[in-house]
Length: 104
Image (cartoon, rainbow, N blue to C red; front, side, top):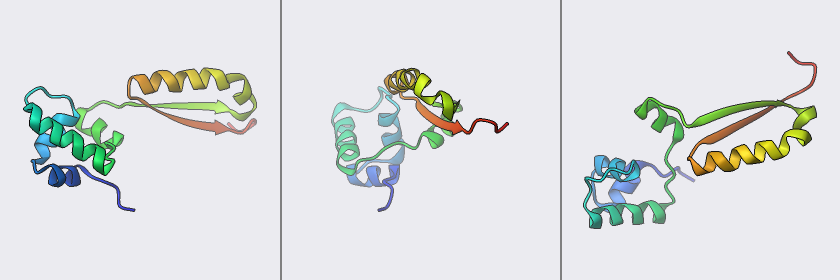
């Protein structure tokens, strides 16, 4: 299945790429009816912004890397779940990687 892009959303809503970008990024310069069309297209197509592309465009990252040893995973599981919950609130992505004990 092909990943839905901002181009697909623009075509579906009948607007420019810039307008879709403005709506996605929360700009207030888009008129309400246009914003509603874009939001409807996003919902209909299931568009999910690419976090890496957004980071490049905005010159900031919304990704957090977390490396934990396998042995402590049960101990830190609740902490990790808490981090994930807070990250979701602020639209951050957690990249979790476990390492095997003894590997440096």
